[in-house]
Image (tube, rainbow, N blue to C red):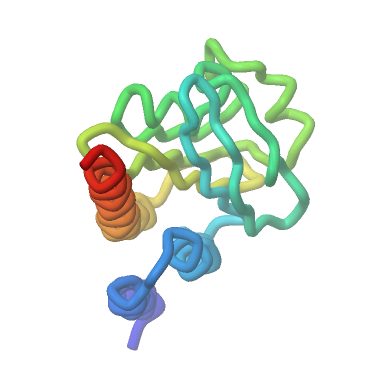
Length: 175
């Protein structure tokens, strides 16, 4: 089996595990180490949108980045991926406009992919980072987008379940 086949197998196994998750936190815990592996990245973060801000929930990186920190949604590339509702590919971080470049240059990050997840509007993003600028492997992007679709479906299910439970309680309280 080739290394490429192995990444697809890892993705398939992860999607199977996601089916059995009982919480959003459990789903994120399953996905974050896998995202780095399938992207062959030096690091990944999983970011949640909270209104006009982003919350860096978890990271798996070669050096500490922003886990537990919040940023304005328009000041980070994860936020841009969510607001533009599309994958953002950055082969060289020094060539990006409209972000606080100093935040990225203070880290190892020189290349990145930010993939939004959640429907109808993205609620999260997974970002993969590399320490060298250069071309981004299309297979890694395809794998990450598939992983994000699967995680997005699971997180959306928990959002809907929570909404239904809240409405049911409101209905009972109002009766």
